[in-house]
Image (cartoon, rainbow, N blue to C red):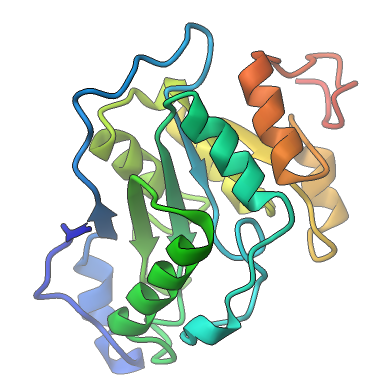
Amino acid sequence: MVYVADPSTRPVGRESEATVDAAPPWVFQRPLDPARAPVPEGLPLAVLFDRDGTLVEDVPYNGDPALVRPMPWALDALGALRARGIPVGVVSNQSGVARGLLTRQQVEAVQRRIEQFLGPFDVWVVCPHGTGDGCGCRKPAPGLVLTAAECLDVHPSRVAVIGDVGSDVEAARAAGARGVLVPNPYTRLEEVADALEVEPNLLGAVRRLLRGDRPDPSGADGGPAR
């Protein structure tokens, strides 16, 4: 993978937050395959996943690859997308960097371990900022989704985002993308109630996207009417 973000801004620790505030998200991207088969009509042109609690078990501020455990159905869900030629990526908040609990090297090591379990992703976009840094990338802001869409040369309206918390689907909505919530035991009930599309697991979420299903405006889909 190629590290695209500005290498001069690698903040670690609370004292570096002024630098964090000005830094772009970290981007790790594989070259796009020009021979990739076209995506079938009606399907998303890219699917982005949250990392912790969605693709892998949520271990707070994890910098240890040995603690990585894939979530159920993650490999099957990704395989279904890759079989259709749909690019896949990860958009992840990692505020442990701004808090001084993680280094960029640790974040990269965990990413490599995830790919050992789940295969290669076309792009990773990581927000290293804290909640008070005022960046435009930390979910629920749209920056991570917009950056990933640009890297994949896809309009945000043709992107789907799958995550386990409200900020994931809110980031998708803010970017003009489609958001699907896959709750886990830590997802708040109000986040489930507010989501327009909800599925019980990752494979169900991907199958919904591949069927071309759209949310039910009546709210019968699991979310409220809009």
